[in-house]
Length: 286
Image (tube, rainbow, N blue to C red; front, side, top):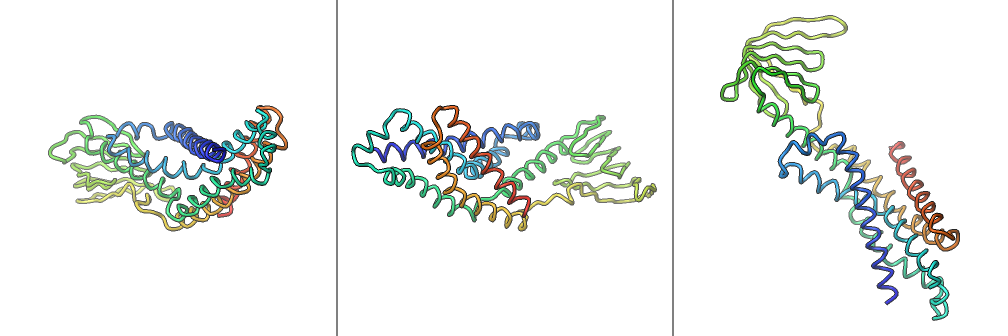
């Protein structure tokens, strides 16, 4: 009965905390790309949301364990249930074992998922949103209007069956004026019969062309970057290994050091800060 209660409290608290932290981080992300997330159909943005919550809920599990363990352990102490448990011959070592079992299950789960879930997957999903958003905008360019998106400024004098006429486009140090253009998708344009002005090494170069292709996403990786994936797996391994020391920190800290709820919250804050500093140092090293 006691073990079921402790296991439920720790499991629920850990998952709920991890989910809330993932949600808070998503809200910060919304300030940056909210216009994209809510400018696309739900069928396009839903995979990004699923990827985000799947990864970051997994990523924040050690922080969730810190919160759930500290609050559960302090609740036993505050309600003076520890003395009752000790009187029923439940030793501190056995109590620690009861807390440890659900934490070990989290450790095993994290170890199993570590090779398959990493931040690069979230970045890949985000890049996909940018590409879809640009495609949606450039395929529906309004006539006789300047449109700016993703560092690109474009003007279409007329449109007919996918063809853009009397078109002007600015991208980085390149200016293009053409009779017509076709948007081929994924940031790639084909211009016909026009002129191009570009700036290189402080000098301007002007040239005319019959056909000219411009790829505005040539430096945007469209697949999983293997180097980032390897770094993510190393970060996951460190994150997984941190579960045990973070659990011990919160368990003994709540029982031995904390005498008020305020002190428990300070303990939780310190634990999360230490954990995130550890991961930040690993990222810097990588």
